Length: 228
Image 1 (tube, rainbow, N blue to C red):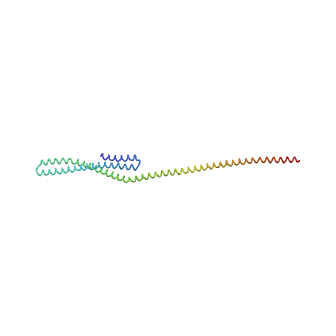
Image 2 (image 1 turned 90 degrees about the vertical axis):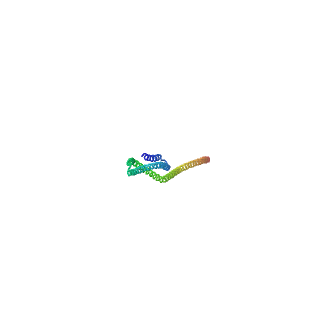
Image 3 (image 1 turned 180 degrees about the vertical axis):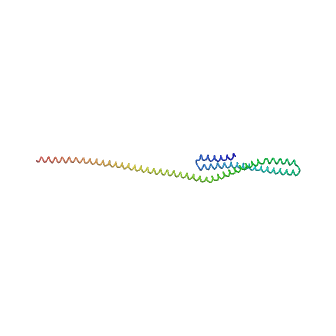
């Protein structure tokens, strides 16, 4: 039946469309339940219509059987009254209903089968929605946990970055210490060089005293020669 096929198409289309564009699972399950409840309202209305049609078809069968029984009883009464012509007319009418009865019964059976299928589909949809509704809380909880875990992951990345920065600072501080030590060493060497230059200056002054000593010795020697 077309309505049953369309119902199946609706179910597959809704679920497949939602899965294809699934981004936020929590929002998707909410939208899925919203769409399914809309479908349920439509299926419920259509199911009620099919069930009503089945009831009407069965009622027509019962009315046809009642008419057959009625004309059968009337024909018997006419025979008892000796009214054979009336009895023939009543029996003809009865046969007309009897010829119609099989098609009415067949239509009623088909309608009842369709109504049973629709009711089964309706009940399955209700059960599916109830099951998804129960799982909705779990999906929301998992999404919340996932988001919290992502927050922790980002914090962990920041902590790792901080640790790397700390190590980099340590290296820069060590390099700065090395540069300072080298500068101090250079300054110390420069200071020692200045002190040596200063010492040499005064030592050079001491060599002038040697010249004086030399002059004194020459004078003494020259004086000695004069005495001789």
